[in-house]
Image 1 (cartoon, rainbow, N blue to C red):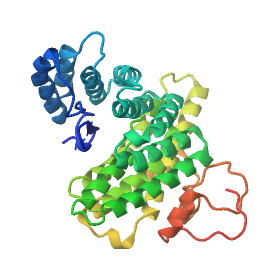
Image 2 (cartoon, helix red, strand yellow; image 1 turned 180 degrees about the vertical axis):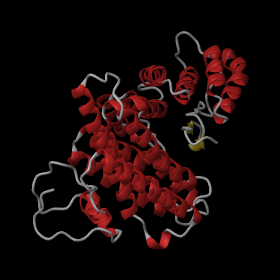
Image 3 (tube, rainbow, N blue to C red; image 1 turned 45 degrees about the vertical axis):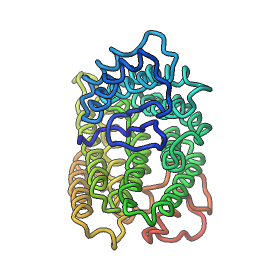
Length: 387
């Protein structure tokens, strides 16, 4: 399947995670009326198309069987899957409209569907660059976490909140939810410890914790905060890659390397300004390009600093880190031309890569630094520091 596919949750007696569209079925004990029975065949066909990532065809089917004034759970499930189809087509505005209707219409009646719709709504807001709305939606999801699958509630939701707060510059809240996400991962490790599917289940959760929905337009509008958020999220993807899951580890590695390539293309687009006479605009574009390149380089080095020796020998991990080294060399080479000053050494990056600029003096370490230290990669602090 394509790397950009979406997580799907089947609303049945037990939640099943599918690597497909955000597919949802009504509960097994739903009472179908005559219209629902007639629509059931088309509905199942629409789900299969979502599973095959044929989003345009799926959208046509869900539009066909959707009633004008949704009222029953089945109606809202159809609308939910229409939103998933739009999301697959990268039509984030249309997807957000569908998810909003589901969240409002199912409020107080179909709690699980409401919570799932709010979660997907937060992804579409992220895609649209509406971080404040994404944050509000995620907080609403957290208040309804009891209705969500355990993996989603304990790990994915806190991870998304941590990333949202990181983008907004609220480091305190970002670290708070980062800690909760780590606790969730530990709980899932215990939960799946005896399961033969442990690697796949945990890697799947970590993959969706680290996957970004930010659009290219939002990257271009506000790139540096987005890249710093990705520095946090890529650590979940790295852990997914380390688990050796045949289904998810490769996708996690692809997501990391694909993000670096995406940022590289972004930096290239910032290198040229249309109006050759606008000297100030050219200088601004050049400065932003240098910032993007430096932050991307920092992200690569943060990733390299997190490598665990005993988990770095698989073919997948070698591919990931060889790719990271190649991109590091490329970034250093271009930075030396864009900005003559020598880029930070890897040792300096390890000291500064996961700190926010402008942090006040403090003798306490951040949660990210503590986690990195546990992986035996950051030096212990000596006294107060000021980045």
